[in-house]
Amino acid sequence: MKTRFSRLVTLLLVGALLIVGVTSITAQESELGPITQAVLDRGSLICGGNANVRGFGFLNDAGEYVGFDIDVCRAVAAAVLGDASAVDVRPLAGTERQAAIQSGQVDMMSRNTTWTLSRDVTWGAIFGPTTFFDGQGVGTRVELGVNSIAELDGSSMCVQAGTTTELNIGDYTAANSIDISILTFPDANSTWDAYLSGACESWTTDKSGIASFHISAPDPGEHMILPETISKEPLGPLSPQNDPQFAEIIAWTVFGLINAEEAGITSENIGDFLPADGEADDAYIARVGPNVARILGQGNNDSGSYLGIANDFMVNVISQVGNYGEIYERNLTPIGLARAGSVNDLWTRGGLIYAPPFR
Figure (tube, helix red, strand yellow):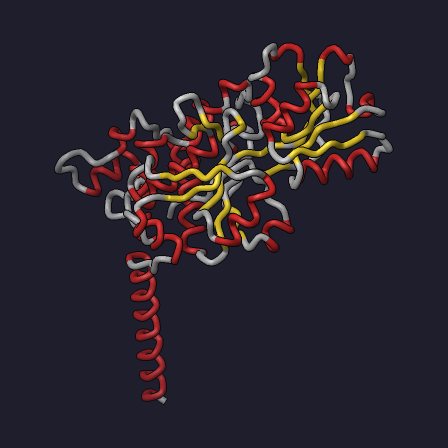
């Protein structure tokens, strides 16, 4: 009996040691996936983006891609390569997104793309965390004097082809017995131009997109957004399914942006949250707290090592791109998308922006 018991104890101890050993190896030596390795070998991140939506993805007068979604790409480049500028943005029309993901033309996509069941499955994509909670609306001219979508009965509406907005407006008008002629166009710019030229009395897309185009109109005051929100549009980055490891990097980069804002770490003050020269780990952690130390991969805490990238990857991300709030204020506040009191505020302020902890 004692011999059997001794053997059992020995087996349990060996098993426990193996588990500890595997955990340690996993934390320190995460195997790189094919996309991560390709990004490292290439020295740049290929990101599918938008060139036409101010605030989110836009080609500015200097020939640079800028915007909220572009900054998400820049954050991932900083996480993997240590350089937020090492991004090759490939502008994609709505109808080109599925092929770009399935064919591997892009490493990731951050381009006003709604997370849906069919896209999750048939596109062969892994969606990352939602970075902006949106909803579809309808823009129209103030001079028409309408106050609801129902009052557009008998008119025409412009919409971008191959998008969830095209499906949503069809479902909405059918369900509410509203007779609206739907005119489709290949991309956001042509849809907006058609509306501006008078081809249709109204146009529809996500409310954020409407706001970004209305502010660019010759007279923004001539246009309005009707009050109805007819859909849920959770927008965020996505990547091909063949590399779950790279998808984890995207996810935890976004979570890091959110956690950094919650902890008060910004691009301007991050130096205050890093160890001082000669500062011992225990003294450092006592000063900034264990949560900050884990986010920044400092004080002998595992962080990026779980993902196969630099342990302090969030230091590069925050230093070069900022936290979630900084990205929002830089890109979306100027186009009229106030954050305070909205669903895109931090959960601690009543919004939906929430991230799991680094631990």
